[in-house]
Length: 609
Image (cartoon, rainbow, N blue to C red):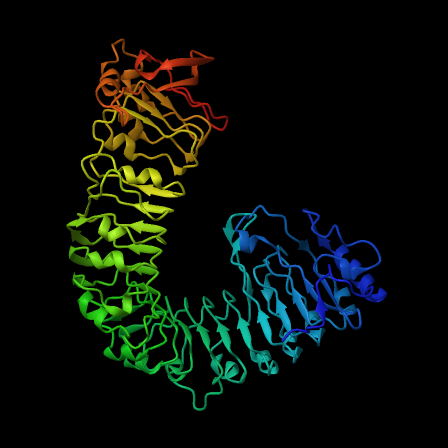
């Protein structure tokens, strides 16, 4: 554990030791700090500086926490530290905790001298864009309990992959005899064959992450296992290409979390799974495992998360459900079985192990029949994905009215009809709604208007609006490529406004198939490329004619709840004949518009040849 005498810089503590203040200033001098993150590093008392923690007894610096923020925010434009790491850090002789993770030390190696900070208990250098060999001097840190060396493989600044860190010999790990947490994710260990005997020399290890390390072998067994304290093993994303059993990790029956996804395992699901009675999370997705899951999976009474996606189970979904542990007092929270060649119908009554699910993913199987009403009893559900199956029948309020915690509803590519009352108010607030190719009722689904936090909405190919004349999606925050399906599915469209969103890329040719289009506004997006030559197909912009379609649409189909005609009236700034003009009035009177509004500075205007 870390030194509990270390206080936050804001607490009242003695002034820092002068020689350590000088060491910190020398360290800062070697850094680049474009965001001025260390602006507080001034004055005599370094214990008040950002990221610096001192002992409240001795005033020695015991903790230096300079973790960058972009790993948490995923905002790659966030200013972080870079430059060089000065050996002046050796002046912090009492330092127990050092975190330089999530910064941008581009194209420098992890300094060898860090192995001389002998009092370190915690070291995190992850995701900071180091390159080259991991220094074996780290093996001198005999007090280390936590070591995080996750390698960066994505060069944020240049939007490209690059070579991060590697090791050709990890025998130095054997010097870390009290290590509890080790994470070397993405470190290239491809040349190391005898890695497991070294790891086996760490008897206090509780958490081991060696995912995506390009390891190519996994021994069948260990003569004597010292890994009796190991609780979490992440070995996913390696290149093992062997049968799932025998394997050394099946003997670690005290494991709570086992991640073996994308490891090239093949053969049947091993019966050894049933011996892992302490397991809480089991991830075996993206392998080549075949056949029904073993019946002794019912022994896993602590199981909370199960992911067998992207295997070839090739069996009945009902049988699989009945092989889930029923002794777990409904502990199972997440069940992912996508693209697993599951067949048959969902059970007509609720299988008890599913009752407290928060995540159910059955995407891409061969399920048939109706969606059972017991789905509505899964009141903890946040994610429901039944898409790309052969399901049919009707889903109604009974399926949905109790799902107050639902955040993602994905039912696309089935023959499901969603039939709810037009006055129904859903209890949930969805972020993702994917209902492509579903049947949404005789009228546009009014319940969608209550979904005010939607980030992704797909109701394409529902045949609800084949004669749509008017579509205004302007001033939202839609992103991605311009939707080509509009040109394919809405052939009657006369008015299309996608203005002031975050669409990017070129104008799809499909939009120019809208021969009736009279008004097109793509302004204030990030459009690039050339105006397609096929824009001449949009003859509605040039022909002189009465706007009967728009008039009919508004006089026969747009009514409020009180049956009063609703006039769509708005002020539009349009660009026509080289001039920006304000149009005020009802849309049905906009006729003979010979304009293509592309009011976006990044558009490369090209002459039509």
